[in-house]
Length: 165
Image (cartoon, rainbow, N blue to C red; front, side, top):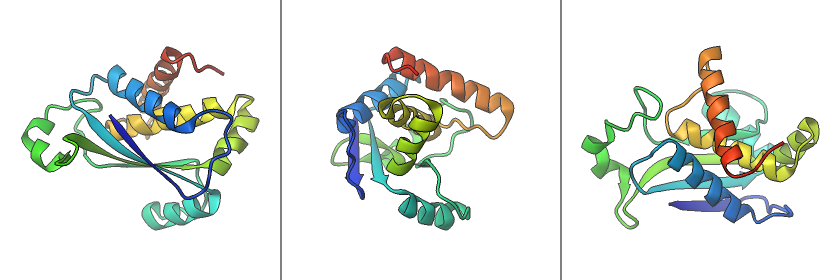
């Protein structure tokens, strides 16, 4: 599993953000039984940049904590059966890893939400990665039922890594 990190804003965390991103992303893939080696892109930025991206890509004129850009559309969350036929188009020929998509996180929101929710920045950062990984694997939270499933799976990823509130 490869996590390619681009820092548009330099993180000043008290934990190793690269290692944690790798661990959370891999835990999500393991939990969801993703059958291939995977590659994601993770961009760390600030509220101004993510606001601009949110406006451009989602037509929402505000900052957000995280954006997810999956490379694939799933019929059902975690159903990878369609991939075998499309594998050639989904694999990076240099790494032989499936390109899952891009995650963009606002470091400003990580800090603010950690304070707001009363937990560590490490927990908030890990949560946003777990949340986005599930989006990259076909999950969503547009209905209360989808949200409940996604919330449970996020907590399972974090609990499995010992990252609690």
